[in-house]
Image (cartoon, rainbow, N blue to C red; front, side, top):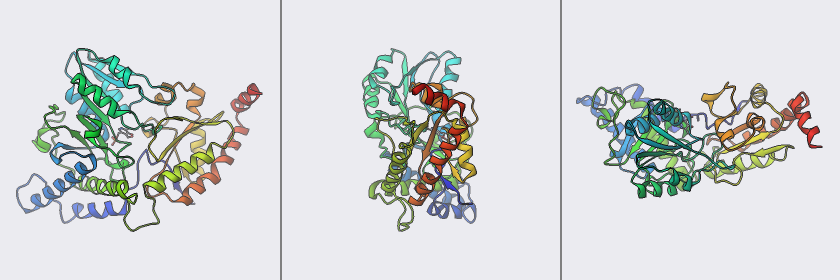
Amino acid sequence: MRRVYLDNNATTPVLPEVMEAMRPYFGEHFGNASSIHHHGQETRAAVERARESVAALLGCRASEVVFTSGGTEADNLAVFGLARAGDHIITSTIEHHAVLNACRHLEGKGSEITYVPVDGRGLVDPTDVKRALRPNTRLITIMFANNETGVVQPVAEIGKIAAEADVYFHSDAVQAAGKIRVDVNEIGCDLLTISGHKLHGPQGVGALYVRKGTEVEAMLHGGSHERSRRAGTENVPGIVGLGKAAELAIAGLERGDGLGTNNQKMDNQRMAAARDRLEKELLKIEATGLNGEGAPRVPNTTNIYFDGIDGEALVIALDLKGLAVSTGAACSSGAIEPSHVLTAMGLRSGHAKASIRFSVGKQNTAEDVEFALALIPETVSRLREISPIYYGVAKAQK
Ligand SMILES: Cc1ncc(COP(=O)(O)O)c(C=O)c1O
């Protein structure tokens, strides 16, 4: 059976170039990057090359990149590494759980947290952030691009507010890196998170940008790895893979050609064109709507509600026919509650539960989009035929 994967915000396949770059570090180059002999020197050099590549992607110095086990750890390191007892933190209602639950955890221990709302388009208003500032505000943590809707937040404006107030600013850029330009100086942030597996690198590796002079308290205690900011023997193959993925992401952003000579694959512009075609055609289906309409969005994501449909049922029905999409964050799959992101945007529970996220990756082809378009309308109408809710809605609208 043909299988098409349009769930690239959950994870992306490792690109062949990334795999090739990693391969020697599972075999002949196996040294511990902290060892002083030849084997260690070899892997140390590879780790430092990867650090340069990640720094180039983010517009920072290599010494400001801390490798972690992924986006979750980097988000946690930013929040727990900066917050002290009695501090106030400003975040938003639509953050990934890696930030939201870290903040909730601190709240349970006595920190004060302000969760700024978003409007119907899914956008944080920077004036709400400014209004939330208090004398004891230590950290503002607002994501760059939302994982469910792709909506891009006004991070540069928030960065200015943070700088004026002399408050640290962290941004979770996991869903922005590789899709749009991410430059820490343009954003004006002190900390920024990325994750390998969201930009065609491997799972289980990520990085936190830590602006020079920012004192982040380590969460893991052990050796003095990563300049004592993150103890633990480096995941050399993972880090090398992240470095290569960062190089390819830069190429994709600069030249619109992230994949070298392989023109079967999608570059960033074609990825955007594919998303746009998918979105335009799906919105022709009756009783559908775009979540995040009118807001700036990353070029690969569209989140659409199909009135009267249970999103999970649609995901399963499409999967049975070979198409992989999702109702939202993979880590919330199976949750009974509707998405916290969509409800924060004011969607009523019915619409939130009827919403599907489609996310395109660089491996997808234009034919993949046609495959999806051949399946989705008929599957939606079949599900609606057996949906008491849909006919209820349709009748009520008459
Ligand atoms: C916005 C955002 N932040 C953080 C994470 C967590 O990253 P990781 O899966 O590398 O822990 C994700 C992954 O879903 C994400 O989408």
